[in-house]
Image (cartoon, rainbow, N blue to C red):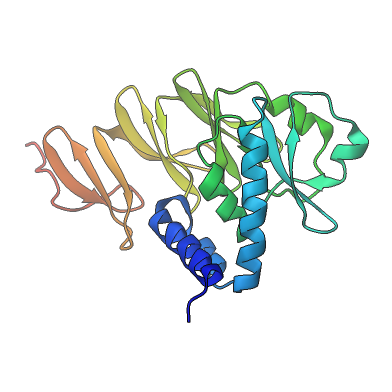
Length: 238
């Protein structure tokens, strides 16, 4: 017999699967492996945080307690005491944290911080709060940020590590990401180094075979992770 409680858990799992594109594969599996009791508890917490964020026009940071893994939404537009901030670490996006990402991903007044190796200093929250028009969740230790129409990346301390100069940028995956500059596309690594020249008119991410679909002019072809054309290559001009 399926109870209302069981139906709620089933709906939550279904919602997660439908929004698969917001989650890494391993995160989704971790969430769905949790017990019904845990999911019920998390569902309650989700609604609490949702209400808090919905009723607050200020910027909020969702953070986790070092001692008991408690989640809190903290207003970062007001000065906070070092004594308070030093009790917290930046939020890591694993397990239940991905559920929060699912529900709150598009909230303009919510910032998600990745877990750091040490306690978060006061400056980290204060410096990041108002610099950017948009901040993404962290991937490979970096978050995409936007000022006006340009994109760059910051680390978990809020330091700009990849200049905010790109017209387009995607989240990092396997230590690399696509970027667009002056109408052309290529790949950079987490150090900001160009690893595949920014010269393509169109460029897709790498597939499971390690190939990326690229286009120059009217010609589509495939390149490997070094930028070498390996399939459907354009004919070389004589």
